[in-house]
Image 1 (cartoon, one colour):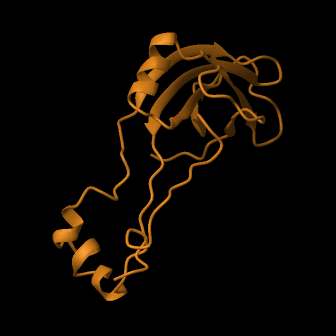
Image 2: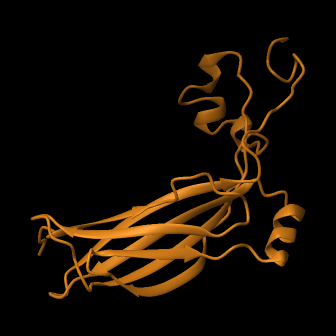
Length: 173
């Protein structure tokens, strides 16, 4: 039986830009819809991390070729090409922690910095950065559970640039 939640949970990522490999701090807040804080509630925090890579797909000539039923989107021979698909890796749980909300219904979770081995591994695998997803499950005194989540990407550099000649960029056919 579905029951409307009586409070909301918000997870706020860091406001400032975070450098790759440094620790991250997320703020968790739980508040009843009538306005009071969920003081003393238990928070189960799970932090997921996934590598991400920039990807680029050049402009494709002949738009009719890429519509449903043919070529790229329809499962044709070009769809089997992995050249333009982004690399996707599974999420890994990097932190599981149980916290208690303070009198204002707030808690803070700190994701530890990358170890030297993790930094070297990221460099060897040419990982562009990491996407962190924080899930917070709050249980109040009445044993009601509400979940909130937020995500943030932390990259090695601020931007990526791709250089392509006219043939690769689709200008010359």
